[in-house]
Image (tube, rainbow, N blue to C red):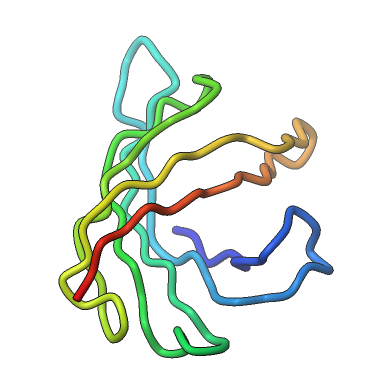
Length: 108
């Protein structure tokens, strides 16, 4: 399960714009792949109360990963698109990672 801050930049002191909420599970017996289902739930500005839903495969050791946007709510109702993920940093002692998500979405 995850419920992580969604910020404008990689530092926790960056402006909080929402929460990344969902779950992930290991899906490969031979690679480090995750199945991820999550919502970007926005809590600030014109997107406050809206969300973007992402579902897909995340091969975590690839430099750039891509997952589909499968929907949304509020401002992002009927959303379709994709996100590109880049790992910004990893702390191997705590197993925490900071990941950049660039979202490309069409909506009504």
